[in-house]
Amino acid sequence: MTENEKPWQWPETTWRGYAEAVRAGRRLSPENWPGGARAAVLISFDSDHETLGLHNANTSPGQLSQGEYGARAGVPRILELLAGYGFPASFFVPAVSALLHPGEIREYVDAGHEVGVHGWIHERNTLLDKATETELLTRARDVLGELSGTTPAGIRTPSWDFSSTTLDTIRELGFAYDSSLMADDDPYEILANGEPTGIVEIPVDWIRDDAPYFMMAPGAGSRAYIRPRDVLEMWIDEFDAAYRAGGVFQLTMHPHIIGHRSRLVVLRELLDHIRSHPDVWAATHAQLAELVTTGSPVR
Image (cartoon, rainbow, N blue to C red; front, side, top):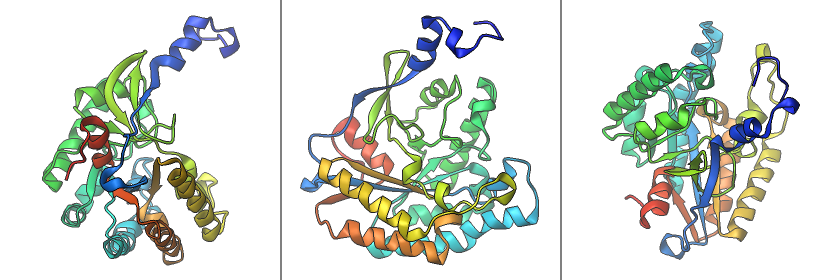
């Protein structure tokens, strides 16, 4: 491929190589959910906090305070809400967020939640070379391991994307699962150039994320544009469809976004709806990865 070649000029070996570099392999949904449940529910939060601005070198107090709101106001409300429902969650945390709020990591663990890797400073990993990305993810894994007391089992890349070497780095660092890609509704094994990797993918999607609906960043052209209760209706429909199919309902939120009082009402009502279905297995991402890998979820 030459520098000036357009995609429609690529030979088959080129476009096929891109498409098949990282691919969805075999589906990994279990035949039966624990306890005879009909479906699984995975609630997650990306605790970006101040890295919301820092990763772009935006050091303005206004921007940083928007992220600080997540740690100061959002997380306590979220933890209280989850405790009331007895729901475990997975918190994916940039290492810089963890170092700014180390006590928060212990609160997650003490409440029975999972802590996963979400980069070093929410860097744009797709712009990094292999050595830099590996160094940052290694440091992030080690920081979160030290603060939480357990080596993280999984990763969610900051950009919800892979560089050309991200998958290699994830394998080298021994992560059991990733939660950044979008090739299915239910878990699957990641293929690398057609070969099984043993890495479980727990897919995300922008439909099941609070940021596209509620993010407020006027300088970046991002403004909240939808009523929270309209989002609730979409998320309930997503859960209901997963429940009917006997699959996985996975949801991603951010403490600085969903943690506002008028929006937390949406999460509360969603959990009420989910809890009205008694045959649901609520789990962390790590528990699901363990279940589809070994047949039994980690305690």
